[in-house]
Image 1: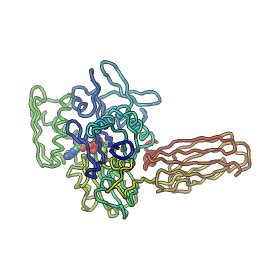
Image 2: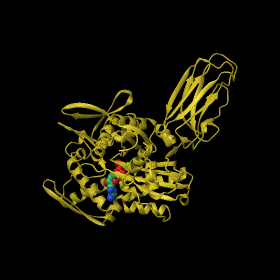
Image 3: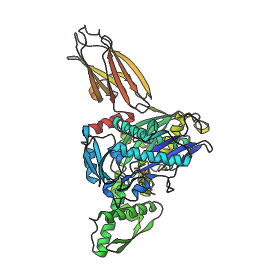
Image 4: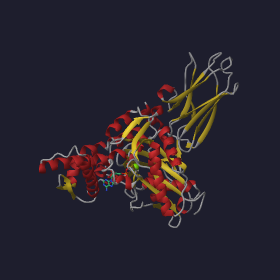
Length: 528
Ligand code: ADP
Ligand code: MG
């Protein structure tokens, strides 16, 4: 054990699966840690039964028996409001119950040990994180405190804060929250030594269980700049499984004239079998699905070919390419400017998806050197090692920095006065950062000043993204330009922005915490 306060782990808290890794000095590499079932990823699932609380594999394995009290997808809820359109539409698809709690907070309703109970998403995520911590502790033979946790690049401040809170409740010292594509790029960069000295544009294509995240990063001198992110919050492995299940239901009907489409238990068993078959079809062109006593004592047997699988899902696969185009457009890059295309997420193994992606990039080789299920946890573990001062050997010249993608500034509005954007933190500044600026009134005897915070590159605030605002009141009457306000912009290492303003004459101070990360633009879009 070395460095500050023992081991530091990296956790990829996925929508469907989570993964944990730790930097090992003996082999100068990251070890991805297997759970007690020998699997290197663990379902992000929590289940409540009459007698116990189950997390991970154990929870996942009893979903068929206990669908109402088996919670997954907490990541889709974390840091969101109950009234969010995305929450409302997800709610319809979940077998578990969701109710509105105080302050528009979504609460998961379960029956545990015979009693009704409500849990917030971060409590469920906390249980998953505690499980990942335990997996690491068993492997390392010691307690683990320090951790880096990853989140999607588009997560806003509230989602990041809630994830951090989940980590703290799991007994972790959350050293940092980092973006998933940044973590994947770290894994890739460390493997390839790519871009440490010369700039490289890297596209991360992360197709997981329920989401597709596409990000374009520029890597150079250990700086990771997320240029653009795009994606689809409802496109991934589960959708492909569903198509297979529907096909099987039809087959069963055709062969036995029996409709199983209303039977949750039967569908769940089909889904598990289809998911396994789907995984095999990434490596073989034909596979069999066999389920004993699927329905009314009848066995089910079907041969699935890869081409059948592709035919069923072709629309989805084509749809996966749209965010790639969008991401390139947003980053103002063409396909030729992308040096590396890196695959991440379990579903990126699907040959057809790889082929379509390769076509977009005119046949350029895709990078498959990083492990799609493990790359994000790997990168998080590297970041954790660096942060806890474990940097040696391979990590020596390796400083990991995120930058703020857009300029941040303030616009003071006074009646009858024009407005302009005063940039406080210029784009591409490395975070964490703290910058101060001095501002004043623009009218005589102005009694209040509104501080509106924007991000963007235009001098005219309304052409930029509005982030938030607050008002300082009770300013003593004075000629324009006399009162002095100290305005401070501070972005912490997690990408969380705090803005404060102080009236020097009265000492009155106000502040606001705003959407964070390399993703404010998207965060705001989803908020609106
Ligand atoms: P997330 O980050 O969304 O939690 P992952 O990146 O771990 O999820 O991806 C999980 C998804 O990847 C699941 O839908 C799983 O079925 C799929 N998957 C895993 N291995 C393969 C494979 N060999 N071929 C196709 N899909 C796979
Ligand atoms: Mg993932």
